[in-house]
Image 1 (cartoon, rainbow, N blue to C red):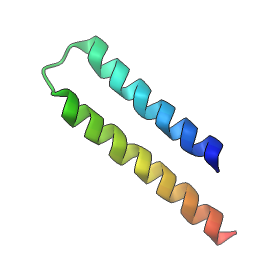
Image 2 (image 1 turned 45 degrees about the vertical axis):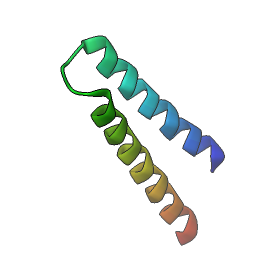
Image 3 (image 1 turned 120 degrees about the vertical axis):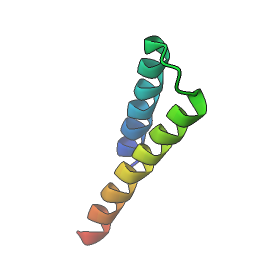
Image 4 (image 1 turned 60 degrees about the horizontal axis):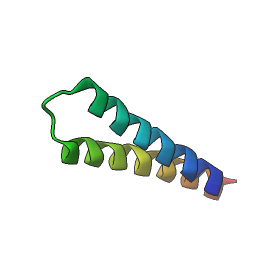
Length: 53
């Protein structure tokens, strides 16, 4: 389970780094919040599946 959370965290970090490299005017806070929401959604789905079995 911890490995899947690490994977979600790495995906969020990758999203942040890609956004930085693009140089879009979107604020880093917005990018960070989107990454956190995506990470939490992935974690919640995995946790739900873990409870189902």
